[in-house]
Structures are given as C-alpha cells and as structure tokens.
Length: 217
Image (cartoon, rainbow, N blue to C red; front, side, top):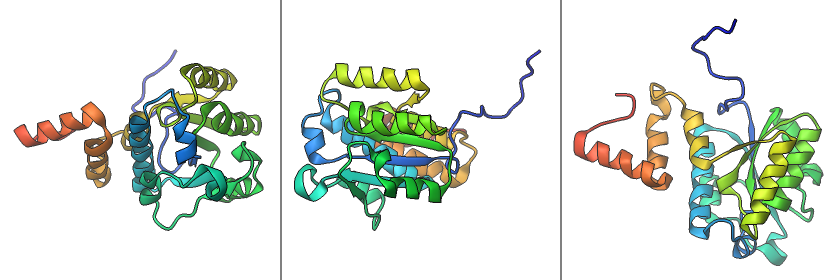
C-alpha cells in the first residue's frame, strides 16, 4: 500500500542535480522562428538564464556559426552569465561536438535540461542523443521554438515519446525554488518573476504594493 511522506518526487529538479544547456538563441535562428513570438521567446530565455545563474545551476552556452552566419547569443543570456563564453559549433547536433561531451562529463550530472532554437533540429538532436546514452532529459518548451507550430509540436512529441520531460520557463524557476520558506532565494525568485514572470509577476508586484503581502506569509 502506498504511503504519503513529505518528500519531493524524484523527477523534480533541484539546482544542483542537473546541467542546463542553452542552444543557439541567436539572431538569425530567431528570424525564422514562428512557433513563438520573438518578444516572448527572449523573455522566456531571460527567465531561464536568470534562474540558472541565480541558483548556481551548472550551465553550458552554445552557438552555431556565430561569427559567419547566425550572430551573437541573445544579450539577455550573455548578461546573466557575464564572462562565460559560448561554445561555437559547426554541428547541428550539439551533442556531437566533443567539447560539449567533455564539459558535460566534467560537470558530472546525469540530468540534462535543454532549451534553444530550433526545436526540431538543435534540441531534438542532443535530447535523443543524451537519452540514448542514459541521461535524463528535460526540455523547456517555451524557451525553444521552430519555423512553424507544426515543427515545434512534432519535435516535442518525438522527444516526449523517447522519454524526455517537457516543462516551461516559469515552471523551471518555481521548481528550483519549490518552497517559499527558502528565504535565501526568495528575493531572487520573486525578483525574476516580477520582471519576466508575465501576469504572475504583475500579481506579485500588486500584492506587495497594495497589501505588503509576500509568498509564504
């Protein structure tokens, strides 16, 4: 018989148990992305990057043909990780670049969280490759995008069928916090939400301004 205990599920993410790989959030890739509005895409990428940086998540930044074709990584990401150079590749599948494998192995986490452009190429490739090699894979769906709704949705379905776990950018932030009693990261979490959390962030601002309210109090 199952028995409830006050412990988190094993598939929930914590800041120290995974590696985040942000892939090809670049100008040229964004121009052709149609499954998500570019303003929302940049906001969500910023939310994920700020969350990872704030919680100290092991993070790898990667680009493709940055100087010759695709352009620089979104400044929202580079600003969250000042001084961190993105690994620039030629391969469409990030996982096939030996420098990525070396970095993943050096970090030593068995969980991989992915987000980037485009979902059907730059995310499917490493997701399926990592799953095949025994890693757990999570994909932040709304910090990724593709040339059409169809392309994005089929890519997400393909990865989920293979065992990847989908999530959203705000879910990522709140899953890292997970308990408002964790006061060390309370201001970090609500601060990111206020700027990049959409309607939820507006609600936090309103409650604080009107009633002096706070999550968990």
